[in-house]
Length: 272
Length: 317
Image: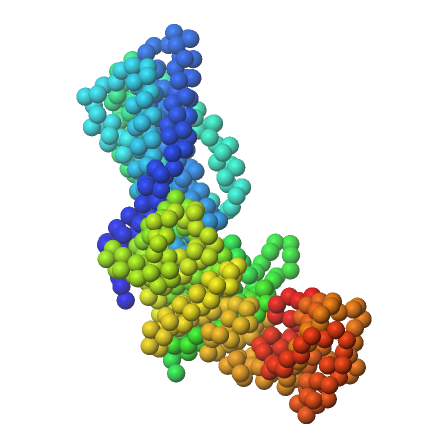
């Protein structure tokens, strides 16, 4: 019998990442939905800021926040809801009956989704910065990359741990997620420095990894007079910790979901 | 003989809140010998798919014990998954933006095949099922028949020891269904007794054509198991005449002292329980008005199903 080794893990991850990367790029609509719409949203915010004569650093905040929100949407709709979509598309039963592990397939989704989303996010950032000539501390690029990667990994890990719960609890969760989008815009501080409101509020919001990612990027990329409460290094560490906990939790929820779904007969659409 | 699949006293219930439990399988026991082409024949809702989903580790039995190649489906599912494949009819799996080759390659990666193995197996199977020309076609552009051929390649490319086919020719046109059946026969032959297939179908001819052993299943119970010839002997008659008329048969039509069933508006089947009366019945039938042909037949599996359940296997008028 063949064994579960790292080669099999890498093949599974690459196999599932492939449609995420190459399949998505073949569909030109991603330029509109993943790039142009977020850029339009940033444009709107920047004109609002300019109408209030806000300091230029706020424009930089808006560009960073708007670029990072693209990741949030992709994590929610591309990762957390993925298993349910796979079930509806008839793929889940093939995944389950194949010898690979479901957690490895989800890692592939995470890897492929993370790469594709990073491309979207960096494109939104580049276009918006160019359009408004926003200034950044480019010398800190390596710190920004570290924070960005930690944020993407932690968000996708959270999405991975949620995916089996969403499969188990069904369609109603999709509506709750949609309802959560607007509050997440506010709580993540996507268009303003979160710790400038209130430290307790900022700490509460930091439970969402994207809040830490956006705040960390602002610390290293924008020269600002607004104080911060958590240093970007600690924020990066917290995001890595989030990723670690979420991945462990995902392993547990996947095993529980599979057992429960085999008992209840909810892995397939055809139940008879 | 070693069994590829063993099921004893398997019951499967579905629970629906506020509703009575649905019993999909009721105390089912069956053994599928290694190397056999085994058929489960029954109408829609008989429990065929539930049984195949238990064998392929997608479902757990509510009661009873099931093993595949000696591994228990409850506790050793991952061992079983190395050795099986499941292909279902009407399956729309895959991603529309990928090509046929890319899609198969992706599933090959999940089955632990190396890149080289995947390439060789996919290319040779695509050639055999006649899909080689379409290997760079996107899934979203495939016809239903082509898609089902691709699903079959997916099921076979990992060279499974046990192949589960759940209504594999459902919705396919006659020619493609025949191609699929022919290729399955070749695949079994090439396995030299090391491959086992469990086919579920409600097409009597398909079961008769492919399977060396058939179980008839209805309302979650196995009614009879045996070869097609053995099962045909379980019908209530020795022969039947198929009588065709030039015009639609009138409402209330009767033939004195004879049992018959409508096939369609212009055709009936007349059952002969005593073969000595063949000639007498034939004479009676040929005197009926508007008759254009009368042919004599042995009973088929449809007749057996009717005898065992009092129901038609496939819907008629």
